[in-house]
Image (cartoon, rainbow, N blue to C red; front, top):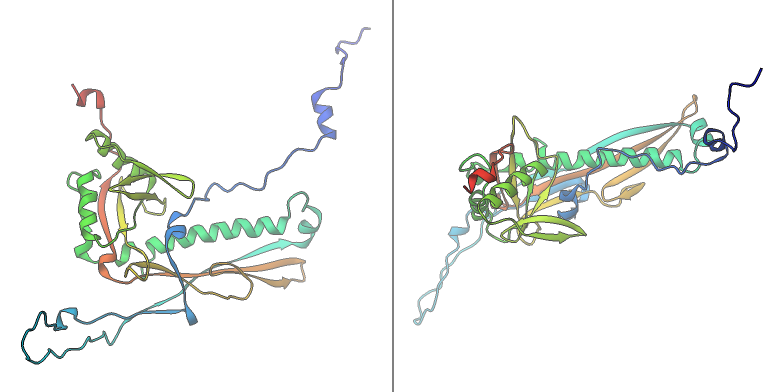
Length: 309
């Protein structure tokens, strides 16, 4: 009986693949973001995990004289300091990574299993760090804005007028806006509808929309709730009495700014453990270093065709 299966004239793909090596990537983690806030903040090393912000009680008390042409006495004055300044304590973001030694011994080519486990854990910790810098109830940006620095939108969606109002609140050398990418897109729609599309600049090789020359920096850690979010405006740096990030330098096992990785040993079950710790915080040096546009609608769209009829 003739063979019903047609013979191959050449080696097939399925069999050939048994002799081939696939090119493998390192593990890809969807949750990794650029973390622009961490990159753009000035960072200050903190001794003993404490950062004290000293402030003047009343600047208006300082008396001066101008253009005196007689021999009258000069005013006598002094600058008084707050006797109970605020102290910021560093916060720790930590986790433990466990890797079975059998896995790391047998399956570490071409990519080292321990290195990849640590890399992915560190990326996750750094994402949590940026979230805490924005939303932490004690030191986060959003929770350290006084009522007079909070602005409501004129119409719901973020408009150029709203961002101009923010600039009046942080007018002493503002650095950048911070908002969710969808909020930035909403502002772009409103500005374009008014005939003033935002200009674009490049920072560290990436394009950013701007308003009045200030970049709108994206962060998905600025939350959207019920279709509404916020836009923050920051002034940064100690010399500008602005916002600064805080970290602990010279840590044992230091792997980066405020980041430490320590080997904890191998258990009787042959599991190697590594402790990852990231020590950080954030300080707002003066109240006018930050302002926020609250309750911004991010889901408003326009029918541009009908708008221009």
